[in-house]
Image (cartoon, rainbow, N blue to C red; front, side):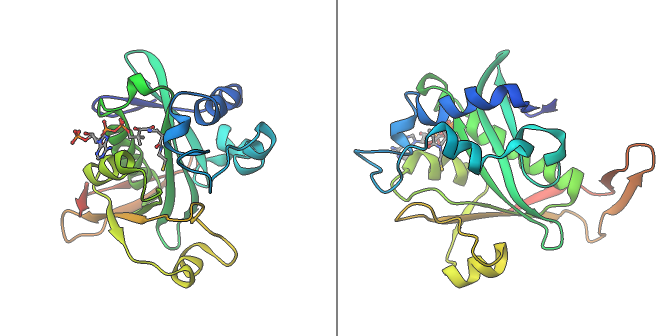
Length: 214
Ligand SMILES: CC(C)(COP(=O)(O)OP(=O)(O)OC[C@H]1O[C@@H](n2cnc3c(N)ncnc32)[C@H](O)[C@@H]1OP(=O)(O)O)[C@@H](O)C(=O)NCCC(=O)NCCS
């Protein structure tokens, strides 16, 4: 369990997959991010399509450091999911995604806190410093939450996105995506020390804390 201020993140399990799909595609938050009338350009995915996009590794330890979802816990309940994909350690970058389970949990700061917590975790564990998220520009609430979490809009052409994330990879799934980026920078001039725990084979970084650079 990864602790934030208002939320905690539990690595998602395969048994969470259907629930996480239902939160996305068949809940009262669905109309605020996909499907007509507001998002005719982003059809609601079927369960099969969701499983193709969110393959099993997002719900298993095999996705660690690659692409993984977490259940956001607040007040002892699962209130949404946050995850990362296209984790590129060479470029120190990852793409994030988030949705809460119900409208009643929105606007309480959970989304902002979950993003902060995930960025910190990915920095601490893998040294990731560049975080991207790409909402529709119609989704004002998402943009407001991401701005609070330290993301800023960046102008990136499709070519630059391909350069960053690989050929054929497209994070622009709406007709009007904005790309938002958060950069964590070292607080002190010294670079952190990377070490590998020989028993767990797990990487860790020590020596400095990350700082948000808007
Ligand atoms: C987007 C989402 C993850 C944000 O999480 P959250 O917990 O609701 O966000 P927060 O409460 O931290 O912040 C929301 C901010 O948006 C603001 N906001 C709400 N509606 C808004 C609107 N129409 N226009 C501008 N700002 C708005 C709120 O006032 C709040 O800012 P404040 O704290 O300064 O008042 C969550 O709302 C959600 O899951 N929405 C539905 C699914 C979705 O859109 N996912 C994103 C897909 S890219």
